[in-house]
Image (cartoon, rainbow, N blue to C red; front, side, top):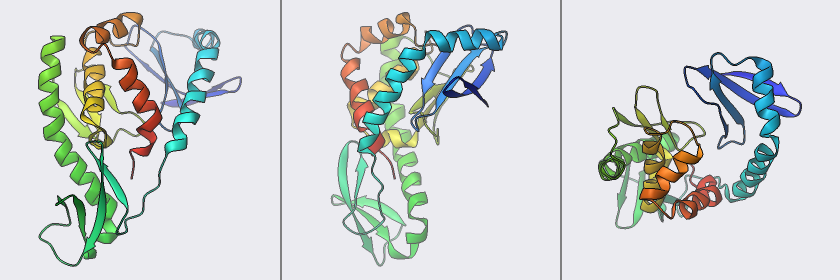
Length: 229
């Protein structure tokens, strides 16, 4: 992506073979614009001008949501999320693995403190792979779609993504959220296999299998920033 500015809107631009244009407010508050290759710069600016009010509205929502952002320390007593619940961390002298969830606590081996974040990320990726794959099996039948590959990875500022090759990627942080929210993230991305943009048709399709998606989407906007390390 390349960075551009239109008036007071700074945005990252990506062109591809897509047929439609999309504007995203990323989880860090930055703006991404995805457009078809053939669109000229004046045409892109025209889209931004037409969407100016909506962009400002979404940015205001992002600022409200990010009041919940939490910066955690890897010390005994600190709470860490897993499937929507908080588990307190205990630093222990000895155990067979660097990090484990046992008896209602995260247990982190003392000698691995310097790589604590790495061990938590690996934990979430490992647990997320099985849980998300299980839920994907359910939702792909509901939506009658067949993704190519499911991956759990670092996605920077997105909860999920759907590629042109029909691969579905999920952020490892997704496994911090409750199952109902994981289901929303999964159903959202799988719906992109039917409608690649966020058109009215996309939301209508999602509504057919998840009528309460509005509430789940709102939960993610309010609490999503707190799902972090």
